[in-house]
Image 1 (spheres, rainbow, N blue to C red):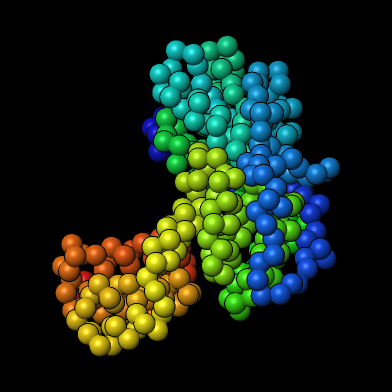
Image 2: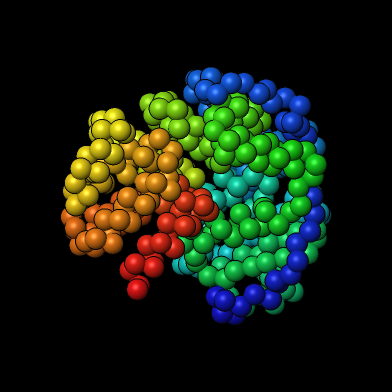
Length: 350
């Protein structure tokens, strides 16, 4: 069986419950975030599920199974929450490589249980499934194989596989409340009401201390109102091994940019300096940094695009490099990132 062979691909269905209603518990405060990072729960990558809620994550999310327990631990259990089975053997080199990775990811993925099956001791199930090479990893949802991969994979690919499996399960109304609250916070940010957004993100974190998007969203609220040190305090709550997630990478970059802009001077002074000498590319770059710190993303992009248009090689391609750092801090889906990439491409490939 090749590494790319996937005999188990299929649709995933099912549901889970968090019993977490946020919409009735979110207060609507004023324009400035009032929540201190000290009031935010410590980051918990394996949050405990409420009664009747989503299970998985933590030490109990990894277990060994046998031929006798496979039906109960995998088939029946997958009718409640997804179960991933790692078919392995002690003599298998790639299995030894994959094992620690897949166990780490399973412990960090809420809602998915990992079952380890030693095919040397218990060959019956893998034989019935036609598995011819190991490691073989098969996800079960609603009692049936739903997806799979074969061979040792890097952590990033394994994590994406688990996240895909977890995301394939339809949330119930309670989880939809969390998603609705996240949208409420995003809408508040778009309207410039960072105080309201911060309170909503805080309410979400009280329910889900491992919600990366809420952590990052709260940090961005602090940066938006000039409380960069408070955003850093939030980042400090998160262990290093979890800081490589996209929203947190963007938050760290946003903190760096805020520190860059802190000593540049008043916005009006920088604008006047650029107006007095449009060819002063350093002044224009400083102006772009200051604009970004004030939330003027499109205007900041225009200043850097002007430098690239005038002199692509200035300062070792410094304007383009700075623009890419903006994109990283804003995120790939931000409208300013999308329009900025389009404008940059029109220059570079014209």
